[in-house]
Each structure stands twice: as structure tokens, then as C-alpha cells.
Image (tube, rainbow, N blue to C red; front, side):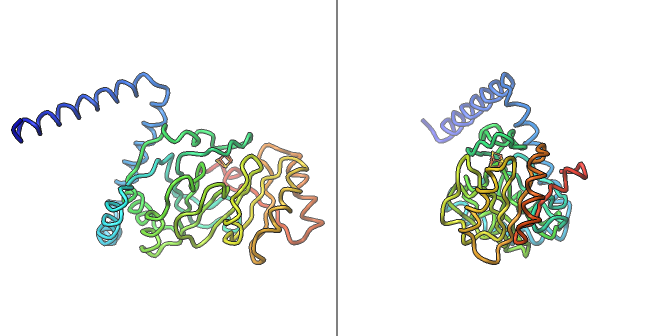
Length: 271
Ligand code: SF4
């Protein structure tokens, strides 16, 4: 086979594969999630490119990032959504933050408010470099990588490149998967459904325990024994649990080393 006909056959085969993939998408209830996520990726990229300042900065990022990415063959991550808002939870509540919500979680909390993020393959893969671009373009105080459970992915490249741009990088995790990446702040929210790995405890800057029933208070203390002394300890009532709210309030009033943590964004009705 000549080089030209070989190239042609590869192109035809690739086209057939794409058509097959589109047919599967159209016949699947995954389509909505993937389509919305793809829009997120496109929106993200156009936001980034609209900023001259970020374009110049990004051209430098691109060179170093591409070298690493090509070596590791990891240039994308599955993304549920990206958005610019204020941090609604934890010590940094109210801070200007750009959020990257990655897909995939195998923890299975019954009261999870982001269940749509669980299936990794129902969300589009975005280029890591486009995510870095969009974070820079938003010009936030910090970038929050959340999920799902973001540590189901290798965050080395994403965090390294965001930090190289001068932005802080925060992580929100259950700690149930090995840590990857470089962070300025780690918010550990341990879940009894799938407990954290021991290695994450001394690295946590804050411990955020969701309180739904009385058993969660014992779970909170069990985890508090493992974190480092300066870490902030928060009891965060489960949003739809009046019992959890009362328990957290009462516990903090009798245990001054703990704080009540509320989900401010839900009160404000924002993401
Ligand atoms: S770890 Fe987080 S994303 Fe995963 S099920 Fe629990 S609350 Fe939901």
C-alpha cells in the first residue's frame, strides 16, 4: 500500500469511528452530561483566549506543559464543570475562586449533592492546558480543584502549571485515593463510606466533617486525632439535615476547638 492510500484509509477509518461514536451518544442518556460538559470545555477555552494577559502567560505555560504531557501521555482530564464564584465552604469561605470540578467518585455518600459527577465516562475530557488557560483568564485569588473525588486522577501536571502561573491551588478531597499534585491548601473531608488513606492526614490544612447524625461526631474526633495541630477543624451540617445542624451547633458550643462550617453558596443560591 502506498503512503498516500494508507493515509487515506486511516482517515476513512477514523471518520467511521467518529460517526459510530456520535450514534452511540445520540442513543444514550449520557448525551446530556457529555454535551453540557463539552460546552464547558469550549466556553472555558474561549474565556481564556479572550484575555491578552493570559494569552501571553499561557504561551509560556504551554511549552513546559506540553513536554511533560507528551512524556506522560496524559493531556486531558474528565471535567463536570468549571466556574468562577466565591468559595462557599471551609476556612476560605467568601474568597474569590475558580473551580474545576473533575468527574469520577467511588465513595458513594448517600447525601452527596454532586451525584452527577460520579460516572467518569459521562463527562468530556478537557485538555489540561485549556483548564490552565481558563483559570488564568478568570484572574481569581485561588483555584479550587474539586469533584467528585479529584484524587482519582493524576493532578501533577494540572497543579504544577496553575501554580507556575502564580495562582494558589486548593484541593477538596475525601482522601480516599493517593495524593498527586502540589497544593497550597488541602481540605480533607473524610467519609465513613470510604475512609481516607493514612498518608493524607498530616498534609491536611483543614478537616471538614459532614454531620448528619450523632455518629458523625465520633467520626470527626477519630479523624481529628490524625491531623496536624494547626489544621482547622470544621463540623459542616448536612444541608438537608436539621438534626445535623443542631448537633454541630451544640458540639461546637461545648468543644471550642471546633467550628461550625456552613455552605454559604447554597444560602446565596450560587454555585
Ligand atoms: S466524596 Fe464527595 S463527591 Fe464523592 S460521594 Fe461523597 S460527597 Fe459525593
